[in-house]
Image (cartoon, rainbow, N blue to C red; front, side):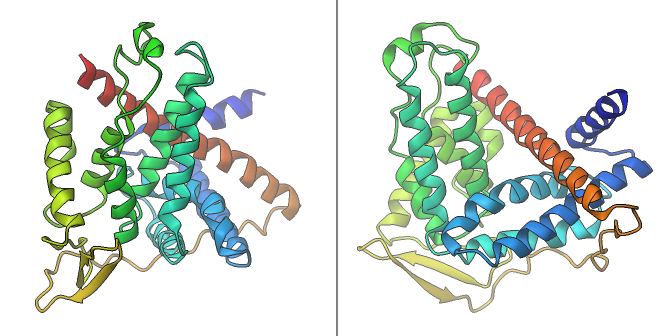
Length: 304
């Protein structure tokens, strides 16, 4: 039991730290995470495309968090993150999967008479799906997020007056969408995460004004690192336009991706895989939880 607690605590520490003290144990955990998601990606590629988002979104979150927040992480983290991202982007209606999940969680809020317990879980689940959308730069994702900008419905009025620690006026999907748009990697985004923290209403207004121009086709948009831009048509589809002189703003080359250390040296490979899966899912959950807590802090500061 003591060993379990030690591993869990070390996992929380590595996931919550921006500057990681890379011990042998931390490297082992990182390697096991990469190994797990390499395996799950291979499994998902053999499944129907419509089930891949459910199988892979947690890996996108987990590896994305490590990529963005763990200085000195293995290049293997960047490599598997990019593989998962490209796999999800290749799935038809990839963004609509998460849109449907957000709407389902939104409906669940109205089923409970209090703002504690289940209410918190529904808000947290919507947050994690918006964060996943922010890691899927595509015109389809922009279309889905743009539609959410007009969704100001959050919860029945009686939930907003119970004085929960979520504030008296919990933020609607429109706010979650505007933050996702700020973080998705647009060139010249309409607003930044920092501006949301200072004034969420102004942040939302700027993003809505930008979306009206994008939706009408009066303005094009592009993503950092891509050599094309997009323009929406009146029917909601879009055209892809090659850029004559695209900016050189893609990810800079890094050292060759490291292969995750083999676990075959263990006496029982099946036991090893079970252990990897068990702890990887726990650590993945902690990643999502910490991400949710950060988002929650933003929402609390905005509601004051």
